[in-house]
Amino acid sequence: MPTSRFEPSTIKNKVKREEIARKQKKAKGQEKLQKRLAQAKAEANDPLLKKKRLAQNVPRTLDNTREYDPSILTANPNAEAGPSTLALQGDLNDGQNVSEQQTEDESAADIASDPFAAYFSGAVDPSVPPKVLITTSPKATRTTYDFCDEITGIFPGAEFIRRKKGKGFEMGRIAGWAANRGYSHLMVVNEDMKKPNAITMVYLPDGPTAYFKLTSVELSQKISGHARATAHYPELVMNGFVTRLGHTVGRLFQTFFPPMPEFQGRQVVTLHNQRDFLFFRRHRYAFRSTEKVALQEIGPRFTLKLRYLKKGLPAVKNLGAPSKHLEFDAEEKEQEQQALKDVEMGEVAGQEPDEEEDAQPPTPSQKVIPPTEDEYLWMWKPELETTRRTFFL
Image 1 (cartoon, helix red, strand yellow):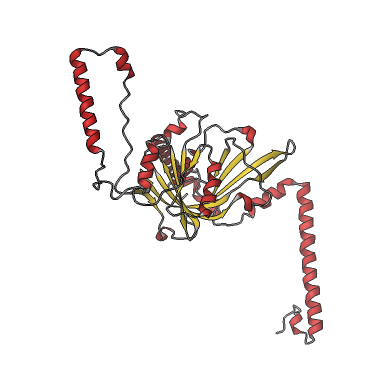
Image 2: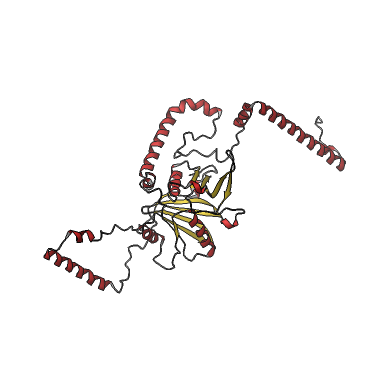
């Protein structure tokens, strides 16, 4: 039985067939346009219609359909409330409240006992920026040095030192050396194929250590119309860190900046987490009016992805290996023995005035020694991503 719908494909003449198809396509487009105009007119008269339409037409994305993680700290892990969810909501309210309370208690305990508690408790002077030591992997090239110069300008208390070649400059030894000299952070930029490809961040003196893959690096000079950075302390904006692991990573990044920003600089650093990719941006904002604000990017821009999180400092495998004796060890030993004899003679003579006791140097503090074995708190593995909607931060 022939269909009642007319199909241009039944026309034998090619020119006529294309003309009819073109007219039908145009008529369909006009019909859609008139429908959208009528809908916009109705919504302009009644704003509630637009709100209702937007509430009903929520697109399903990987972000709002992510798999539920028990470590998520948000109140409601469900992105959407469907009919089945609403029907079971009354039965599950009691169980959800108990689990939410347990998660909040565990999160509060983690925050109170984590290594960053001193920074957030106010024990650190907010006007003094944290001391950050930035270095590279051995045998780095000019591209990596340029990137290090850029990130040195991001952190107010950062200092860049080139890494020497040879043995004895393992990352754990560098971390211990920096911790003994008052640095609060260590950042090591790794290079592969003459391009920076990873960043290791160490919180001193007790860790943790985070390793990130580095991609999509674009320096400030490559950004069209970029602004010039100033020495003001920037503001920090962090988005999308909802799990306990995400909170740990976010608090680690917060400790790189002074707690009190300088608002007169109008600089803001943004770290946006989307699907476990951390997008770094730096802007300057300008008030065009009482309602409008303009942004001008300063740069650089890059993307990070967490690969593992270690407890403590990076390990040094051969830390306990015996080292060669130095030539002046015997001379130092003789000097120490002579000093002990002098002290004993002074005690016998009874010459111990209070002023000399006050002038004695204090005993040296305990040195920070890196461990010999790594202890991983979290490590990314391919088998962890069971679906495309599995995220960890």
